[in-house]
Image (cartoon, rainbow, N blue to C red; front, side):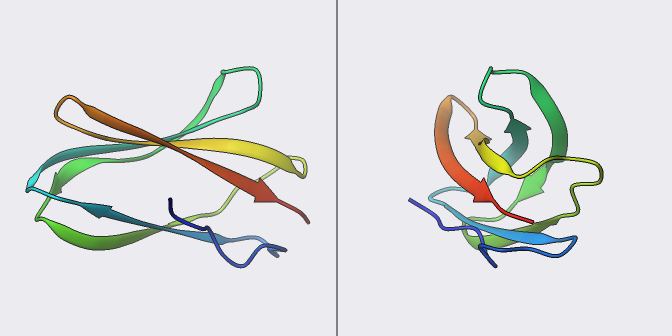
Length: 83
């Protein structure tokens, strides 16, 4: 499980993730109702550790799910954002 930081953000939050093999990666943020809020990445990444910065504009504080998808593997990462 990855932990986004800083937990109490002021305009940006960093979401680290690790992928076991190289491939096309999708990083998508969903709200607690399962609605897609933001597509953060849709590109090729080599295997290893990566991070992406999200600048959620006009998004209220709360808990969001970050979907990191590679090929047929998907991981949901809970992210709590407090402004």
